[in-house]
Image (cartoon, rainbow, N blue to C red; front, side, top):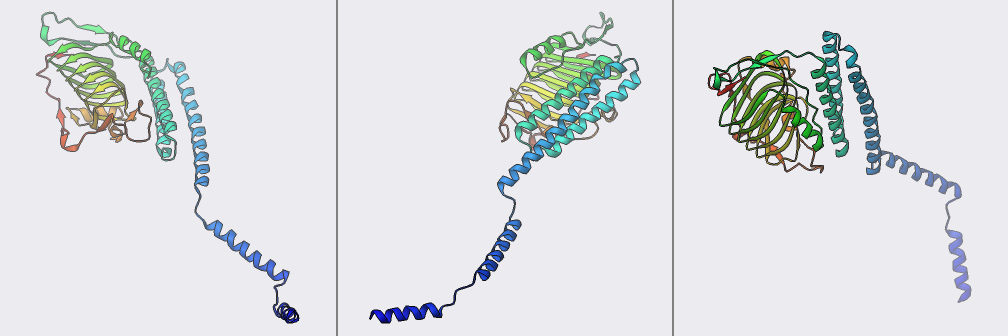
Amino acid sequence: MKGRIVLHMHYFEESVSLPSEKTMDEEQQKKHLAMVERLSKRPQTHSDKSESSLESTSSFLSRFSHLKSSIESQLAHSHSLSSDPSQLKLHFHNVSASISDLEKLVAENSYFLPSYDVRVSLKTISDLKLALDHLSSQLIPKKKFSFKNKSNKKDQNPLVTEPKQPQLPNRDCHSRDKTILAARDLPGFRNKAGEVLVGAFRESEVGEFTVSDLDSCEVRIIGCVRALFVHRLKNCRVYVGPVTGSILIEEVEGCVFMMASHQIRIHGARGSDFYLRVRSRPIIEDSNGVRFAPYCLSYIGIEEDLRGAGLDAETGNWGNVDDFKWLRAVQSPNWSILPEKERVVIVDISNLNNGNEEI
């Protein structure tokens, strides 16, 4: 029995042919090449995408930093041109174009940038624009203008006022307080209730202007001003022509604003609607219940004023609001788009005959 088993195993070993080492090497090589080909055709992995995104972010930050430094150098050079107004205006125009290029760079790359980098970049652009507005107000001579009060024609003596330079608004409370104090010395409308207040500036160049401490008033500003400060308004309607610089709004409630400006900052707003045309993204802080819609103001000559202020083109930024106190990736609950069915179609403020006070 044992002998037959041995013989059977011997027959099996002889009858089975095993592959040679050469054949095995060729098959393994083919399998290896096929695996390499499959791997090369696989889609990019999450890790690969992350590395690519990091490289893109690094490239963006490097370019952004270079352009920012160039703009800061241009701003620092402004004082050396102060003796030649025409050259200075051209210089400021070029700086403005450089800032617009920087803003465009952020917009084109925002789809892959982390939210924090987008907000920091936008804050930097806002600060550069404010610095440009400040230098423009400081170095380009302003015309004097007079204002009058219709309600007291007997004592109507022209009061010539040279606007003082307010400190620029920053995000910290201390700087905002300084801005408000400086704005108290500017021409404007103050401490009124239930009145229609009209500022007609189409035939004169106006610097900074203040609207403060009003209740249930309607404000109409026709023509251009360089900067506008709005403080402590309740249940008011404010209609403003082009502002060539920036607008700062503080502590307003239950109001409607129609404004066109290169930059708009809103702090402490409650339950108010904003119809805007703005070159940069509007900024809100410590606000809630605020809604936004496109600019729809009209008066005779407004198209010419908008072109002169560089605000004739609709940018769509009225709906691209930055909430500096909301750092999450999801939509801020503090602001929303005003539904079309609730919007006013157009507001025409050409008629100046029914104002209680006129400047």
